[in-house]
Each structure stands twice: as C-alpha cells, then as structure tokens.
Length: 271
Image 1: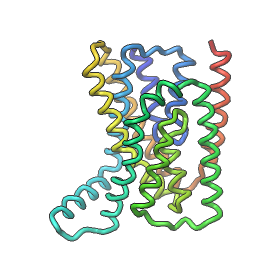
Image 2: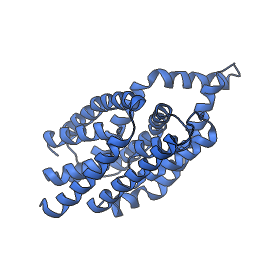
Image 3: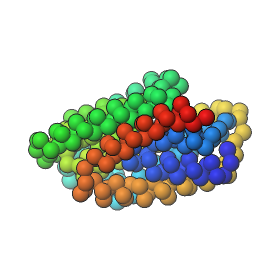
C-alpha cells in the first residue's frame, strides 16, 4: 500500500467510524473508485485503524473515562462512589458482552461472506430504515429514560448488528438507545463509550493474527494512515456529539440511501 492510498483510507475511516453512515460502506466505495489493493498490508492496516480510532474515543472522553475508572477503584476499595457512575460502568460491561461473543463467533464469516458491494448497499438502506424507526419512536414517546444494566445490554445487542458490513456501529447503538428511551445526546455518549472495548478488542485480535502471519508490510504507510484516522476521528466525534444535540438522524438517513445507490452504480459500471 502506498502513502496516498493509506492517507485516503485513514481519512475515510476516521470520518465514518463515528458518524452513522458505515465506515465499511465508504471503504468499499473508496477501494472501488480508486482501485486500491491492500494486498498483504490489509490485516496490519485494519488493525492499526481500529487502534487509532479507539485511541480517538479514549482521548476525547478521557475525563469521563477517568471518573469511571476511579469509580471502579473506589468500589473495589469499598469507598463511597457516585452510584450513577457505577451504573454506567456496569451497563458498559454488560453491553459489551453480546458484541464480544458475536464477534468471536461470526466476524471472520461476516467479513468473508458479506463484504460484497451489494450487501453493503442493502445494509446501508436497512440501517436507514432502522434510523427512521428510531426517529418515529423518539418523536412519539417520552425519551427521559435513564441508563441501567438492562438498557446497556439491549444497546449491546444493537451493537451486534454492526458486524454486518454496511450497518454502522455508532448508528446501530445510537438508534438503539433512542428506541429504548434515551435522549439523542445520552444515546450518542453511551454509543461512543461502548465502542471502546469492542474496537480495541478487534484491533488487538488483528495484531495477534499479524504477529502469526509471515507477510511483510509497509509500516510507514500504515502508520501515516493510522495517524490520519486518529486526528480526523477526534474531529468526527466532536462533530457528532455537537450535531446530535440539536438535530435528528434524518440527514444521515438520506445520505445512506444515496450512498447505497451510488455504491451499486459504481459496482456495476465503475470498472
């Protein structure tokens, strides 16, 4: 992989990992449009992109994560804690379980069998309908629900949908939170926090696979792409957190539908 391709894919990953538009869909489109062949570097590149985007979430939410970490330490030390913070910790732990189990069992199959442009396009549209339903529920019911372990687990089930290329991890969990009664802002915040262990786990798993692999890769290009993904990811997180406080998911709904049509067009006529 050359430097330009690495920068392009890092830019696409950094923006789309945290917007509900599907990073997979955009990476598929970028590879189709620019005929990018990852070759032997694909495993290393995917691993570093996962770690870079996880790093962006950790840096952006560092203060909140520090509070949650201190809460855990104080709980183990049998010291007084803010019970709402400890509830968030438990919800995050329980909410991570479905994606971890499903990822270990199904991720390889999903990536191998369901990564065609047409399936990605179909899931972009399917995700758009999920967002429509989330907006319908949100506008026609109360959304003052507070986070608890049961809600965290259910949002974790929505996160499993992200294993299907084209769905969007952030989109599935934000929509799930809205359907379950959380405000858009709270659903978005929990979505990003919930993504950290899953993205870190996916990146670490690929690192171990890379260590066991004999292929040589261009680490300079990969490092550049990862740095781009990290920097752009920070900006994308900030944009999404700010945007969702005042706006609906409808711009992303229409964008996903248009992108799906474009991917199908490029897959048919782009080569």
